[in-house]
Amino acid sequence: MTPVIVLSLMGLILGLGLAFASDIFKVEIDERLEKVTDLLPGLNCGACGYPGCSGFAEGIIDGKVEHLSDCKPGKDEHYDAILEYLKDHPAPDGTVTNVQK
Image 1 (cartoon, rainbow, N blue to C red):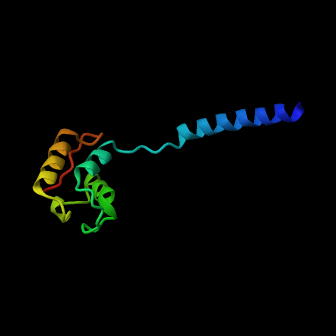
Image 2: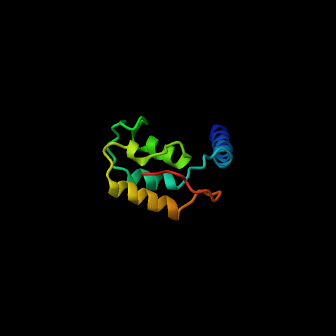
């Protein structure tokens, strides 16, 4: 019976430790990243110089991309939707991403 009690206590302690660590070490992700990624063509071709559409979207959000036309398979409908979304959803600190077609 002693091994069962010891293993149960170890499981409880380790589980609480993991729960505590997950709160301390969580990574904050900008919610705009997923939406901008969805608005891109989704070909993941890398023609923009970034590793796929998610990398290009991260560059847009971070302000590293100056022109949306760097996305070669993208069309005006993609660019307009992204510009409209970014205009309506500024960064959490209030700054607006400065990107052009």
